[in-house]
Length: 271
Length: 113
Image (tube, rainbow over all chains, first blue to last red):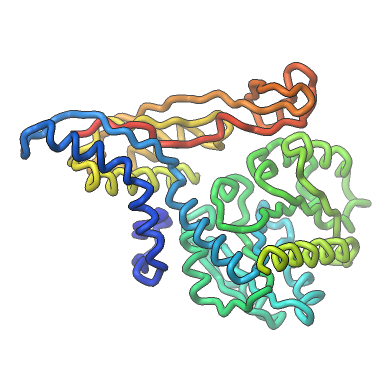
């Protein structure tokens, strides 16, 4: 059992990690030491005594610590990292393969694929000629920052490049787990119904960009684009929206421009 | 079902704190869960009992302190109560809201021995 994030994965490779995690952690608990000493002195050793202990710690503290480490790594290397989230079948992998084909000659790209089982998505990415690493979460419903941190050790990431993290297809759980990304990008396909943003508000609230995918199918559907955008803005007034079809290429230029602009911003920060 | 992962996270904190704070058993865990934290309290209770089994917190009581959602309404310039992320401002009806309360999930306090 992984002792860090509760992901249910085999052995922990904490020793492979930067030592900073543990040090930082001790600092965070410094105030608790005082309580502890006071409590120890207040009763005879060996006697069990019921007492109260103040914790005041986020349940996600561990994940957030790892996310912080990841973010620092990304920033040190001028990496633009995007966490792609959606329900299963929204077209994330096709969006990625089409994006890679348009960008790979100009920009370094790598992909971390999260799925419960199989390496099918990583294989599709590898076929485009860029690096891909599959993480199988088993019964887990989301990627967490700890697993992503280990994936970073295995990838040969080029400075000033783009890393896409394709999260497990799930519009609920991944919203709570920061991976250290610059942005969560939520992909919604028009076959899913325009009210997804208010049905799954947490995810649309956590995302900075919504990609409305498969717009080539709109003529065959009753999907109301304006209503969908209105729902998304209702949950998250700051969300940006791009409509496209990864299949026909319509709207892909805007997405590619957005990526390039965001990478440029990372480079400015890096410099 | 990320409530299961959350409970694993709670257990790790309890185990880690057991060393620092010198306790052997956890009797009660107080959590503060915001209405906008995306946590289903009933699922959390169920997972809690399952995850704590066989640990230093086996049979521990789980007390959940609910914190109401709150957001800053930009047009009104005041904090307003919200129950859902898609709620409008109860005064002006705007959705220009920035959540600033009730999105936390924290371990607050423990009763230990």
